[in-house]
Image (cartoon, rainbow, N blue to C red):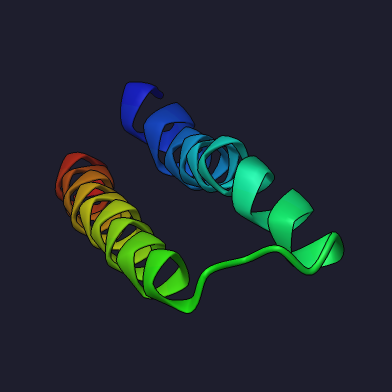
Amino acid sequence: MFWLLLSLGIPVVVVLMLFFSAMDDFWQIVTLRIDVSRLFGDLVHVIFIVGIGLVAELFSLFMLVKEAL
């Protein structure tokens, strides 16, 4: 049950992390005051957050399958 909840909760946490990290950049894009170098710098952060979330999700799904068998 723990691994099932974890496998459902990790994508939610990753999306919330991306939302809160991109709020300032989204507002700068809307007001047309975004700096291109900052946009690429933040892209690295987004890829890092998604990568960590992907590894965590794969591990939780592995453990879910392992516990089910």
